[in-house]
Image (cartoon, rainbow, N blue to C red; front, side):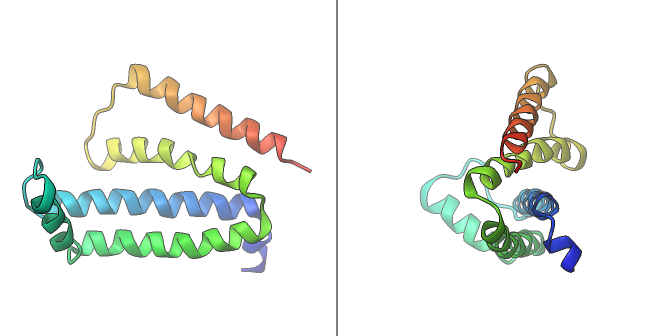
Length: 131
């Protein structure tokens, strides 16, 4: 464990992975929870509260809990202005994993360039924060 905690980049990537998997689990849970997809107001709130008991939703929250603890460890070691933009890599992974596991079909003609811009931006921030 000492090796892992000495690498802020590894910690950030694991944090991104946990958040991404958490999102996929939450979406899966909400898809399986029933209720009306177009519910609004109090009905939407009640559907969300009922969904908390769904195992996928519980696991999604668990992954978020673990990622929150890891985030605290990251903040102790890395400047916020460097670490926080790297969390945007989760946008890239969520789009890819939602296509693979949830069957979502983004418009790749516009999505892929946008994801590439995120990757380039994170890379530039990472290079600029090197010491």
